[in-house]
Each structure stands twice: as C-alpha cells, then as structure tokens.
Image (cartoon, rainbow, N blue to C red; front, top):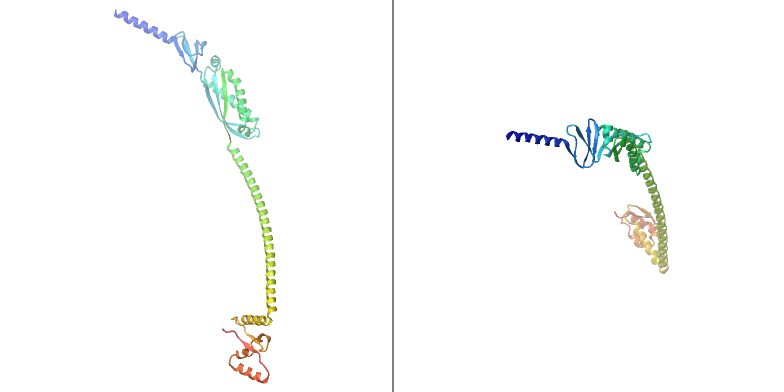
Length: 318
C-alpha cells in the first residue's frame, strides 16, 4: 500500500512538472515568442495562459510597453557653420516581435544602438539645413517631426514603431558661447552708447531752452526794473519840484542841512572852505562863533576887522 502511494505521488509530481513546463503566462506588458530548435513557432501578443511542448519549446518574452532611449551631448553643425550641443530622446514600441527577433535577436541594446546611430545622422541633417535660432522658434516642432520621419524606416526594419522624437536641449558649445556672449555684449554696449548720446542730446537741448528762458526772463526783469526805477525817479523829481515850488527858501535850507549832515559825518576827511562861501550861507555869525577858540579864531577875528577873511578849517569830531 505504501509503495503504491509513493508511486502515485511520483507520477503526480511528474505530471505537475510536465504541466508546469508546458504552460506559460503572458501579461499585459509583454508579448511572447515560442521557439523550437531556433525556429519561431508561435507569437502571442494577447495576455493569457498558453501552452508549449515541454522540454522542446522555449518562450522569449518581449516588451510591449512604450520604451525610451536618450541621445545626449550630440555635437551638430548648423547652416552658419557653428557647432551646438543637442540632447534628444525617442519613444518607441515593438510592434512586430517576429521581425524584432529575426533582425536583432530581440536584443533591446542592439536595436537601440542601431536607432541611436540613425538618430544621430538625422539630427545632423536637420540642423545642418537651419540656423541655431530655428531650434528656439516655432520651427522646433517641424524639426522634431522631420527627425522622427527619417528615423521611422530604420525602426520599421527592426519591427519597431517610433511614437515620438523630442529635442530636450540645444546649447552653444563653449567657444561659440563665448563668441555669442562677446557679440551680445558689444550690441548692448552700442545700444547703451546710443541711448546715452540721445540723452546727452536731449539734455543739451533742454539746457539751451532753459538758458534762453533765463536770458529772456532776466532781460524782461531788467527792463521792468529800469522802467520802475525811471518812474520812481520821475515821481521823486516831481515831488521835489512840487515842494521846491511851494517854498523855495525852505527847500534850499533843507538841502543845505542835508549837505551839512553828509559832509560833517565821521568819515575822517578834512575840508578847507571859505567862511563866506555859499556852502555856509545859512550859518551866518553862528558859523564863525562855532570855530574853536584858538589862534586860528583870533587870526580870523583880526582878519575880519581888517576886512579880509581866512578860509575856515573844519574837522569832523573823532
């Protein structure tokens, strides 16, 4: 009884092992090739449970998802002769697993190597027909479409469909970047000089207008002041004339008093005048008695008695 149970268990294990070797599962992210002695027997693209001949057939799984590879730091030359560095990437799908197996033995590394070579050539061709500014303008989309269209024939030969090609970066190389910087710097300096020259011109024009206005204002003010001064002098003369006409004697006396006050001011000046000059006409005898009591006054009195007069000497009080 025990031997029968052991034999049954062995047979069951063999059957399970054979079933395990005969079945395989394809999920939604994969597609499978059934290979017998190096020949492709079947292609499974739909997810599910499938069977094969155990110990004879082998199954090779191939990606069904969207895949991507990058191409970095590609040195391309534009139509102007300058060089630029470009980064790009490709999105693709394996749509024909049979062809993919036949051409590159379902090796993704080998397939991407061939696509990378073709992408490099396509980028150089597309950039070579345009200038650097095109990659920064609305032409960028058309450039990517051109690269994709040039890449598709090679991809179809591999059983691959190219979904999209994107240019991530287009930068100046170091030497071109320095040249561009110097050119932009020179342009900005020229623009600054132009703006500065226009500012100086405007400043000079404004200053000229201001100077002219100053001259005009000063001339008008000087003219008005002369007119006002003349009117004032005329009014003063009129008043003096009117006052002189009312009382000529008082006017002469007033003018003499003003002259005395101005002449005898403390200016440190000595004047020698004759006592009978018109300047002392309002002094009379008071003018002689006002002289100091010294030899000069005795001499003056003597001279007065004899009928002659000496000049009067007056000194301002210190």
